[in-house]
Length: 120
Picture: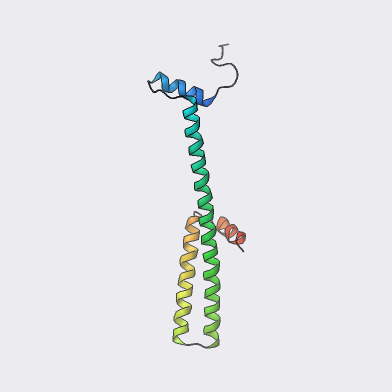
């Protein structure tokens, strides 16, 4: 049985600092911890921003859907060429909003549906 190299737990920052020192790079464990904390915080902020963006897209889909329904109802009450164009424009806007949200959800239909349910 070979003896273990380390006894107890190994601090990842200490290990990384020792490996960097072997290669001639001077880095303290405090510097590494500060950098790692900054990276974690940046990732957390990016994730929060991404969630907010997806929710904004879901709200836009809901609004576009409602606008299309209203435009179609008005067209059915009084069918004119102008209202028919408004219906076509509203449906095009809705399709674009749905496509953008679906892209943000990585083409995952179940995630898309869950996001729409969450903003109702």
